[in-house]
Image (cartoon, rainbow, N blue to C red):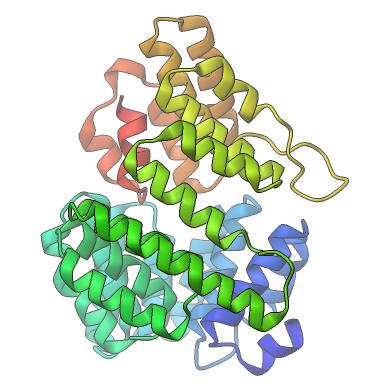
Length: 364
């Protein structure tokens, strides 16, 4: 993968694939060292740099990044790519917005600062305002996975279900067994109140997967495509027992535990949710047990607090804080804000580059 990436440093799909296999194999340090070797290549490969920034955050080195990009900007103050990348690692949202504005002005054909502007607005719940910059980003870079993700989220939030349904069905003609497309289609149909069409979409997907397996001469579905569709449909219907049953059929311990945590949390069965989190899934086969994600621990803390079990709430908040303090700069800032308790103000958390659900969890 590294050889191919050197030949194609702007290939977003290849960069994401390299990141996934590196982190999945516990090779974050090697990944960071490799990506660091390409930082001075010109023209700037934005996808490469984004990956470097992501892996640096995972390694707890994100505090070093502003100085790295400030040095680069001293040599090329009007480089649109560098201005965008510097804004992307700026912890202050207002200052980051200035970098994105300068990036657009330096090169109006650069989609990434438009994407960043849309993300900032969407993270504050300003979806109507995010529509214009994300539409422009999509026009400039229609094949980008990163742009497509935010483009979908913004339009979904704005209730553009018919357009999204048409696009998702069209995309399914090209990749009929895509789990991501199927889950999005079911979500859009359910949000639009089309329960019957969602059922039909699941049945059609089941047939498509069966056809693919027959053509490939596969005895079973290696990706659990149909089960993922079944789980998504059950969850969207609010049928959590069916959701759990489908997850259990997969034989995938990690999938079953994630499903058990989500379902039991919503059902208020917090002891069972705890058990799912404490299952000790291994990040790497043969390696140590994987710790809960901070957001999972934080949600469990909130749930215990709602049930007036403050000892459990404090325990899981401590686990969440420990994880956040070992994370990125935004994670560490979030931990500091959570520690303020009831004194935390909405205005203080709005400035962080976090998704709305995480901000809500912190405020509650």
